[in-house]
Amino acid sequence: MADTRLIQSRYRLLEIIGRGGMGEVWRALDESLGRQVAVKCLKPMGPQHDQAFTRILRERFRREARVAAALQHRGVTVVHDFGEYEGVLYLVMELLDGQNLSQLLEENQQHPLPVEHVVDIAEQVADALGYTHRQGIVHRDLKPANIMRLTDGTVKICDFGIARLGHDIGMTSRLTTTGLAMGTPHYMSPEQISGKEVDHRSDLYSLGCVLYEIATGVPPFDQEDAWAVLVGHRDTPPEPLRTHRAELPGFFDRVVLDLLAKAPEERPVDAGDLRRRIVLGRTGEQPALGPGPLAHPGPGLLPAPRERALPSWTRSMTAGHRATGVTGAHAERPDPAAGLTGQWTTARATAPHTGSFVSVSAGPPAPDLLAGLEGRHSAGIDLGRLGRWEEAGEVHRQVAEQRGRVLGPDHPDTLASHYEIGLTLSRTGRAEEALRAFTRVAEG
Image 1 (cartoon, rainbow, N blue to C red):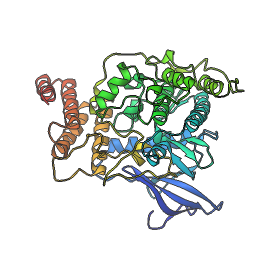
Image 2 (image 1 turned 90 degrees about the vertical axis):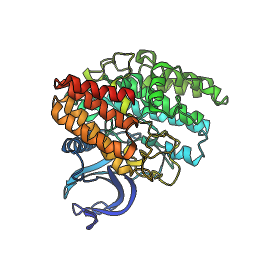
Image 3 (image 1 turned 60 degrees about the horizontal axis):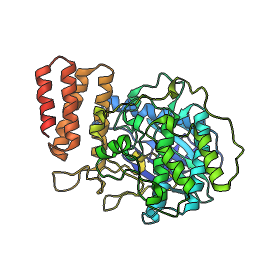
Image 4 (image 1 turned 90 degrees about the horizontal axis):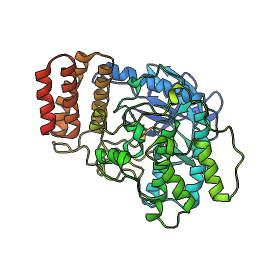
């Protein structure tokens, strides 16, 4: 496809505007309509990738196309076309002229955005979320890299790659395991961390995290260790925003703290309620809005039960990237026109500030290698959830061996693989071997 630079005799690829471990985005010309578009292409997976992982990734890409194409709102990126050409899945989107919130913070040298911009962004995102939630869709991966502010001030939500249709009971955990973007630790809701079903109020919590960061310059739980971030979301009350930035309006401080309530029922009832509160605080007037609260959320939008213990899958998570971006020689700056997921634009596994991936070799391991290992780890978990424990164990053993070589035997990701090995052994009746695997993890 890269040789012909033409897809389906219609989309002429002009230049790459975004690249990540899973694919790339091109600025392209739609020769049929004479307009420029963005074409997102899923990178073909090589033989080193587990077939289950490849299958899941392709299904997620198709899902993103279906979900996004069904949404028609000025606050949601428009999808024009989707298909497969010479074995490569592609998604044709509107070409956005602007920057995502992560880039805006980086351009502002990690200082918070102007107050009037922050409030305007909050109102526009609330409006777009209200629309998507009324369509029965929960985004589940809201973060600064997935929210674009265009040059004309319009704000758009991007990337519905792991969105959940409320009525789609066929959507199982096989598409949402860690490593395949269950979410980003700095922006995950307590109920999402629990690994249970989430509803529209999980998006509101994630939006609260985003607004906290663009308003203060730091996320609500600003630890470098992923485990500490997750525990913070679950247990620690966030500091009021005005302790970081006294000039913020009092109403905005209260709104964001309400979004960050640990219990979903303590947050605003829905995005429409959130927007009403923002407009009322900003202007003193009640806005004319769309339909009211989600009275009947449907089976996929039911509140999630709370639980105190962080689940086992969180042990394998690394802190990822918050909106302040990546610095250093291995950084790859997201492109403003891409509108992509973090794994395409910001999920650089060698991020210096996380301390997550430290190679035992002369230099940091390649991001593509680490992304591939994360994907295979996730595929192994998926196989276990399908009851295919023997196959899952083999995947985890291979990943553990490779992680041990490139990250070290006591790295958290290596230990996470050994934990999963122990789990597969226990599920196949090999208790003594499982105990040895768990002991190794505990010692590490």
